[in-house]
Amino acid sequence: MTTTDDFRAHAQELKADLDAATSEMMKLISEHQFSGAEWERVSLWQHEAYERWTTYLNERSYPDRGDHSVSP
Image (cartoon, rainbow, N blue to C red; front, side, top):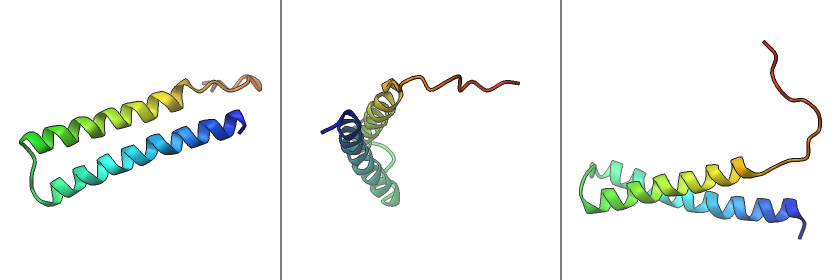
């Protein structure tokens, strides 16, 4: 597998976990369950899954293909 394939596979795994956590959170919201142990567990899961996904995406370094900065 190439580096890009590895990156894509891991990003998809992280996104699947984020999707599962978000779905659980939405289920609780549809049941009007906004507090308690289950809400705390799912909120933490969703938050941490989001952080893992965005951290992974943001730490990816790409070869420099020129200056991509935005000028005012």
